[in-house]
Length: 296
Image (cartoon, rainbow, N blue to C red):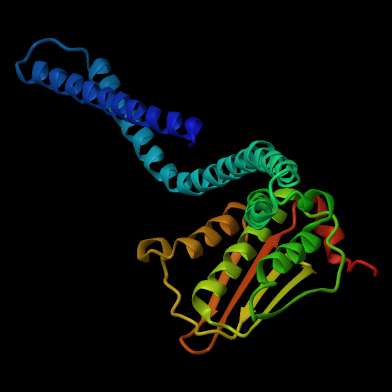
């Protein structure tokens, strides 16, 4: 699914092997020089010093590389999220352009056929036409989930509201989306991260929380874009490492926040509901402008 990422991962074992091979060659060279000294053969002192410096240099290079590895998981997570969004957009276009058009063509052909079949078959044709309509609606919903096109044109608030209406209209959950300020100037990638985090949180509420009320708040703050998601459901005990205990949704939310230098805090206890707080810092160019509240 991620060919560029896989190609990058395949290269790393080769680099590591080359690194260790170089280190072993330097060590072997140093040992050989020491052997010459022990056997009392003539060996310039500067050559032994040069070999020692080479070994120390390689050791320092490898230790520096080991320290830099700690930065790579965050970079890798950011890259994976970016590739994931690209794959979602591609799949959304495929569903809309191919599956959607085929279903529409099938519905038109069925309607043409329905006008020509005997009366005793009208009910069957109507049932099939109704099934095609439902399938088209589900394809549109999945397409909107994979690639929220309204995000770029209408903004984060409108896109979130449309998603909540579409997702929660057939449930008994009482929800509200509060946003008292205009959210202009938000980076598109940050807006997508906020949308995906909310999307995952709403999915968790529907699957696990058994909540009656859901409140989502968006606000422009001096330190960044604030997102709050709170429900009155069953609650749970947040894990320090969600991925290790199988909480993939929570792990994904943390990764999205971290990829944009944001902070995510989950406050929940069994029987006390759940509150998720996320802050995405403003980019340097818009930091000063974000300090001034937007006029209504």
